[in-house]
Length: 327
Image 1 (cartoon, rainbow, N blue to C red):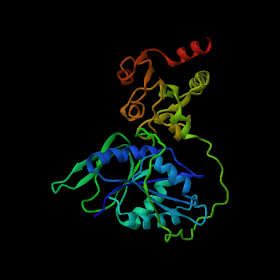
Image 2 (cartoon, one colour; image 1 turned 45 degrees about the vertical axis):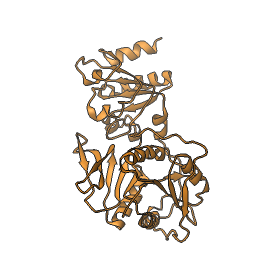
Image 3 (cartoon, rainbow, N blue to C red; image 1 turned 30 degrees about the horizontal axis):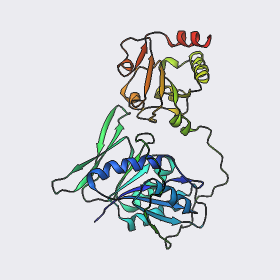
Image 4 (cartoon, one colour; image 1 turned 90 degrees about the horizontal axis):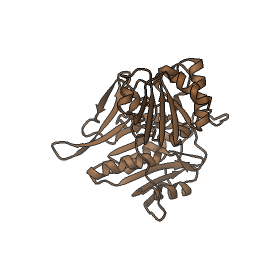
């Protein structure tokens, strides 16, 4: 019978993606109820360093396939090898980073395994059926991100497969000296790919910068003008802060999607967050609820954002920013 909580160990240039440590935390939350082992599935040209990193994160079991080439972006080939790995590992659930690679590879894997996949989960919870078997409630925003829905994999269908958004879980810390049972599948090879990578370049927008920032300035509808957003950027630069925003600010192109905060974007945990012109809809505040010190500035004294703020100012953000920048 399927058993184990398997995490896809997404990696790039010999290093694990930061979200993998977050999925280990999610797996531990599931393990507390089910008692299952936490497994890693890793595929790369050279797995030795990656296996060492995975051991430090506290995996119980690590399953690895070493490829004969760099398989970056060859998601069609990677999905075939990964599907074969999961057939052998036989986990009850698979946790996948909700990244372009995770979505692309595992939508194909789900089709090959006939198990389906829930995308962009923001919360996972374990429940029990009448026969005593466990299942995962896969919670995610839907219907234009205005409501939460719970999706459950059909009874008897394994693995339960889901992508989890970065920033939702606190990362597990690596510790030296941890060890895991490691298995190399030397007979699983990477098939030919129909994708040829002609060239690659670093992304223009760095999601990691806002996820790791200690101070974040967040703009809302009140910043939707060239004048106000210019002031916001100058304010952030003076504070040496990262810039984030609500969905409207991303939709209008003032910020890249990679800096959108909330259910449709990313969850952040900075030491200080200052929101400017943000009303405080739950779709956004879900992404900042773990901020240590939260300051809200909005000219509407009844704005919901003040309900979660440690400090609030009822005034026009433009007046505040202009005054501060003169100091």
